[in-house]
Image (cartoon, rainbow, N blue to C red):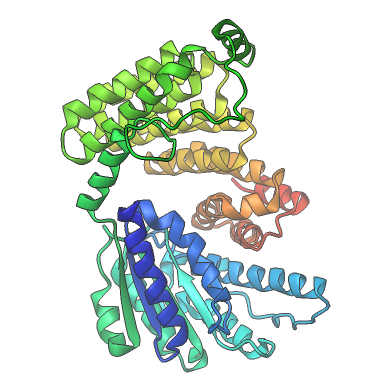
Length: 476
C-alpha cells in the first residue's frame, strides 16, 4: 500500500542518515497512530545498520502528570544491559556488569514531587555508567524515547534538554517518537538547532483513501488482471461435491455460507472504515452494522463481537455515546454467551472508557473490574493487570481510597503469579507506585518504600512472588 510504504521509506532514509551522521544528537519522529507499532519494530532494528556502533534501546513509558517515567526507564535500561550480557555470554563473550548506583529519591516519595533535575538524575547516572563500560567495538548509546502517552510536552522537553546538555552523556544520542496529534517540542528542536533531524512519518489521507478504494474494488485475492479469473491449473485437485464440502466445513465449526459471503463481509468492513474516514458517518454505521449482522448469520461469534465493538467506536466518534454503550453491552452479552472471555474483557474495557468519558466514574470502575475478572478467567494477565489498574485509578478520582487500594492489590497479585517478562510489559509497576503513593500520603514510609522497590523489580524483569506478597500485604 503506497500510503504506508511512502512514510516508512522516509523513515528508513532519515534513520539511516541519523545512524551515519554522529554529529546529530536528536532524531525527532512525528508518526501517525497507525504506523507507531511498525516504527517500534523498525527502530531497534537500526542497531543492525552497517554504519552503526551503538546499542539502540527503546523506552515506551508514558510521560504523565502523575508519573514522569524516568525511574521506569532507568530500571529498563539496567535490565536491557543485563539481557545483552547474557546473550554475549552465550556466544562466549564477556561484558562488564553495571556498577551499583545510589537509589533514587523516587523510592521515598512520589515522582511528581521531584524537581526537573532530580527526575532525570538516576537515568543520566545509569546511562553514563553504561557508556563507560561498553566493550569495543561498540561506542555511544542511542536512547529511543517513544512514550505511549504524553500529557506534558514542555516538561518532557525540559527533561530531555537536560540529558542532551549533560557532559557525561556527550556520547549519548536520542530519538524521540511522538504521535502526530501531540504538540511538537519546538523549544527542544530550536535548542538543538542543526544537531536535530525531523522525520515526518505520517500517512497521507488521500493516498490512504486510494488504497482502501483499491482494496474494495478487488473481487478476488488471486494474482492477475482485475476482473480476469485465471484458468484452472492442470494439477489442481478435482472439485469436491458441495454436499461433502459443506459437511467438512460444519465438522470444522464453520458455516458453509462463509465460503460465499466472506468477500462481502470483507467489503462491508473496509467500506465502513473508508466511509468513517471520509466523514460519511451514517454510511459507516450502516455498513458496520451490516457487517455485524452478517457475521452473526454466519455464526462467526468472535468476528461479530469485534465488528460490534468497532460499530460502538464509530457511534461514539459521532457523538452517539448512549447508542455506543448499548452496542458494547450487547457485545459483552454475546461474548459471555459463547465463552469468548478475552473479547468480553475488551468490550468491558471499551465500556469503561465510554463511562469515564461520560463522567460516570462508578459505572466506569465497575466495567473495568468486570474486564479484569474476564481477562483473569481468560488467562490474559496483561489485560487483567491493566483493567485492575484503571479501576483503581477511577476509584482514586472518586475519593474511594479503600476501593482503589483493593484494585491496585489485585493488579499486583496477578503480577506475582505471572511471567516476569509479561509483568515487565504491563502496568503493574504503575499500580505498585500508585499504591505506594497512597501509603506515602498516609505516612506509611516503610510500605511505600517496599512498593517502590517492588515496582523497580518488576520493570527490571526481576519480579518474584515472595517479596511481592509481603510488600503488598503490608499496604493499607
